[in-house]
Image 1 (cartoon, rainbow, N blue to C red):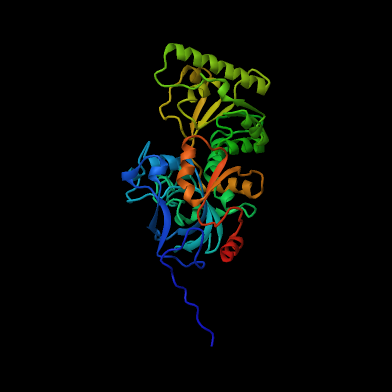
Image 2: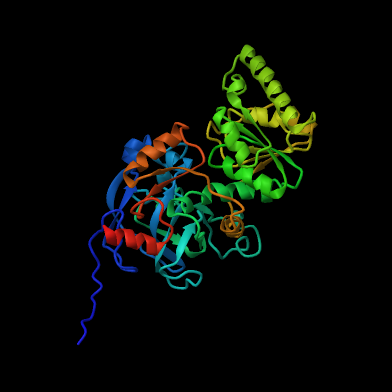
Length: 420
């Protein structure tokens, strides 16, 4: 007589290992932020043993293989500009808004994924029931939130809870870390350029931070759509890097040290800033080949660059902005806006349809994640410190459940775990 195999749930499993598919431990390892220790990531990010989130109808539990590093993790750790604990009432917050992994459990009513599916996760949460979600603009949903920032269940833990609609097929040619690194930045850039700024073939696009997490996708999307991207980078080495991604030209911003706006500037500082801004504009003319500004300015830097963005944009140009890493209070000469009929367009991540479309571009290898750094689970706080210090470029990921880098699927992962 054959013995019946008993599926016993362990109390907890080490990071880099997995129980049998579908078997849930009692607790999980994960990085938690708590209000009393908000601050820089090396202080606020602490690995703890945490409860595994309960899966509700329409939701999915994912075993996280790798998670992407984004600036909202720095904001979450610091509690600035807004404390995450003012957005949700849970006692702890697991940061992280990008992940790749394996579907581990599905809630009632879930039909688009099943246990064992290999997925990536997009970070947009909506109610799925209002008129905006059904036939309108889902980003107008009153319950729209960014998972892992405005919700307590992020990606820097062994398991994460998401809405089923957040799950998209993992591109089979990518490693876990590559797949876990791109969704937030790639899908944000897609919505900004394609849907919000309505970029078309022949447009000239100025991309601030052309070698950064958003910029590397903006450059590729411009090339894909037939637009011409001019990348702004922080050193000469990144000029060729930007060109390799499709930029027709690149500008080293260090050549224009007075271009950034600083609050409470003196008249002398203002004059120097305007001088450098005009010189910067002439550099754009050289790249474009005619005396005109960019038709679209891809903005996410905010306070330090926004006055230049408004000044430099072409007549009827569009400045599309999704964030402001240098400051949220923007000061610019509005005459350049109204007299030349320019537009400022706000953009916030992407809805499920936009995410699925952009993800197909990844699956078809028409857009490629530019993974430049992979950190271990133990290095997650330091990875965010490096992000805060602007020491990273491209996309960046941390291993969570994957036992090592370079693995592309569940079978390869289990083989390595078994060998250990």
